[in-house]
Amino acid sequence: MRAQPQAAAVPAAAVPAAAVVPAAAPPIDPALAADPELQRAHAVLARVPLVDGHNDLPWTIREYKDAPGDVAAYDLRAATKGHTDLPRMRAGRVGAQFWSVYVPGDRPAGELVRLQLEQIDLARRMIAAYPDDLALALTADEVEQAFRAGRVASLLGAEGGHTLANSLGTLRAYHTLGVRYLTLTHNVHTDWADCAVLPPRHDGLTAFGEEVVREMNRLGMLVDLSHVSPATMDDALRVSEAPIIFSHSSARAIADSARNVPDDILRRIPENGGIVMVTFLPAYVSQAAGDAREARRKARAEAAKIADPAARAARMAELDAQPQPRATLAQVADHVEHVRRVAGVDHVGLGSDFDGMSAVPVGLEDVSKYPHLLAELARRGWTDEELEKLAGRNLLRVLRTAEATAQRLRAARPASLATFTPPSETRAQP
Image (cartoon, rainbow, N blue to C red):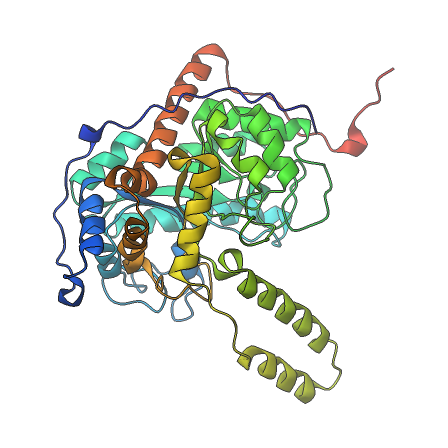
């Protein structure tokens, strides 16, 4: 459903500097101790929790070949094969993490709710397994409490509205279980919202999709627009009474990917009060990496048509062995700076997509590297106050505003009883 933009202003109240107290700093690598900007980055992250918008570790644990879904077997106290473990999180000064409770959109419709519940359960078991290191957080205050206690505040984000099964009751159940954002789509359309990578079906949000956004506002669940089409972004910005987020998207002006945010949307973020959390995924950071990935995808599709199995396997192996362009930390910093220029420093954050990508930028290989990104921005002239906003103050402000909006809306209206009606069942008006 499309309508003329009428985005309501949302106050962007700053998070008080006194709200967070310094955490004990881990030792800095002696080889880097002479880098004053890296030292500045560590000092900033001792004062403010670094909040990452998207990490796919729960799905990595589910797919762990040695012991699928076994939280204990995928021991985060030791070095893992992925991008994330507790020692590297400490080295990277991670203060809060949105763990993605992702479910692929290509699974049978009848299994989606079960799979979503299993992923929420897995993530919560993972958090509970490390009580000295991780703490489930449901509010901005709880994020700060965990940070002061020296633990990583752990929030849950559901990636894709397909797991709602077109039910607002299901949405409310996920919120009760701790989900604090919902990405409206993943890489498939829902029955009520268009994703970014397929030809449009709805031209944005349907009437039911708008009701999903309104009910998320009433619950205090953040509306995440990563993966959605520009028309869906436009409709959500028009409808939402609370700040929206992009949990892991970069700037389309720099890398022309459907996952990234166009400048016309970036310019509307300040009025809404939301935040774009810049992703590290190479195809969405580097135009060359994105073009190469698309070229290889097409070449693999052609190779799949080869009739002879041995020849087909040889061609696939040849394609996989071809070197690919690498994204870099400096290019991620370029995206951060672009979002800052267009949307403003109050509306930018970080959403890595670690453990959800097979390749990583040079210089941002895992969760230990966040201080290096902040140091790069410091070298480009960012002040400590600006770095604090990027690291976590902006997201904490968004959370608090969403919580306040939910409190106001719950006092004004009950839970929505709207139900999804397939277009074929919609009765024509006389």
